[in-house]
Figure (spheres, rainbow, N blue to C red):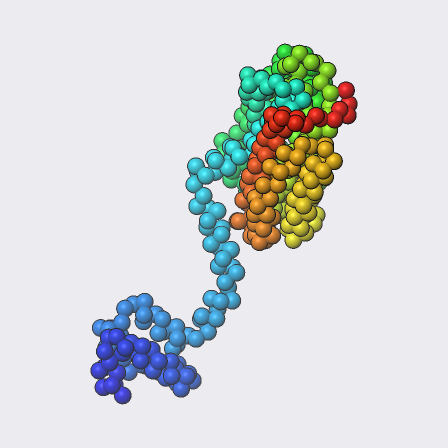
Length: 401
């Protein structure tokens, strides 16, 4: 037997040796303490690599070792995920802290509101658009920074490495910067409203900012009661989008611009897509929110039902779109162009359904919703503009004068 083993070739011989040792391990399992043959040892020293020897030892001398690894597969996966979290680069953390894609919630309400004003009056002020956009970005920066400050105070962001407070190491500095942005942004919005001569616009914008304040700031912190999504809907939908419509429409010299079905319908659609972003941002924060008593909707219902809510919200978005189009609350061009965003909506829903249990992957859910929000809002604005340009022009129906 020893001579036969030593005569094996380096190619097929290794395979035969493997099979032979497996058979021997079954026959000699009660005598695990016995020594291997001397020829086998010589062969192992000269013919086998260290890796292959370890594989043979596992197969022959410790068959239970492999089962142990399988039983700990979940723990091993969790360890890999923790290591990945530790290995996130500083650049990635800074990018997450800036939240640049989230600033689409400043861009889309303004763009849709301006398009609705163009549909109503036929006039668009590029200078005022840019001025108000800068003001809105400052307000959104206040929202992001103050949210990090107050979540730091409650401990919700204790392990959130991309928190601005954790990155800069200063709670006070972040707080001062946040409210400096708020003051500057609100002053600029007041100036825009004065130039437009429209008091209703600044009142609506004030309501939007107040909604943002009671959403996250003490002593209210209504987000901890699960009311963040309704407040987000009102702030970015009916309040902000309608206010931007009034600011842009007033540039025609008509300070008493009527509230039409088009702007109200469009503002509801914008509010719905914005709220969807906020809802999906909670998927990867459930454990942290639960630990500090932040009862977000996903803490209450769990990720399985939460993925179902995302699907229902997207279906409701398009049902509302088609309803408004068919009843002439919105131009048919809006209905057609927004329908083209349905593949993006399906992609977002599928991603949430497939990954709602994966804390690493589901982090990207809110960015899928940002894409849907941006594409849908751009299509909605384009539909309003095109409706003004077509020969048989759509006439918005006045609801409030």
